[in-house]
Length: 192
Image 1 (tube, helix red, strand yellow):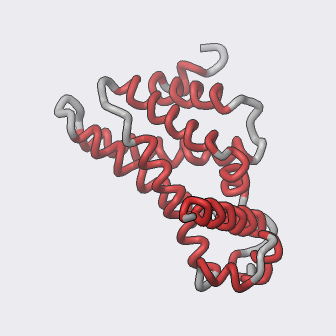
Image 2 (cartoon, one colour):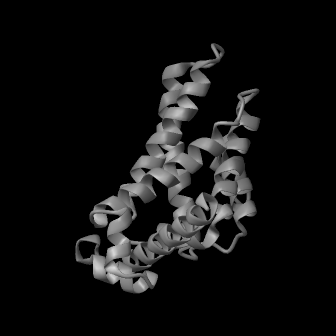
């Protein structure tokens, strides 16, 4: 019985998440009402209140779920050398996004995405820095600057990919980003 209930809860919450993110693509978060979410999710307000007290609760839960998914996926990456490490981070990021491409696509397209992007960037930076600090062969100060430069840029490129700014598959984009970061942009520039 619990498993059946759990499946219904999961299905209902997923409908609420999707409705909320769709609405974020249409209006500012301060304009989204519980009634809007309930109608879009095809549930009643009482059902909404069974899980959340307000719109901010939904937003916070989505943030936490997305961050947890990224942590879980990149947490398996071991540092062997810089090239393999960065490549694996990009692959794990891509796998996380591909797991629910429609949802992440909606989420990354919204004008209200900054709340989530800041958390993702912070988590990725902390994780990469922590893993790199475990190796003593790198200049930690220089690497911290590199991480601060690269991680937000990578996230920005992925978000632009979701808004159809690039004509690459997500795998091609990951490969290109890895090449740019490891070998430099100038080396990859046409004519060089």
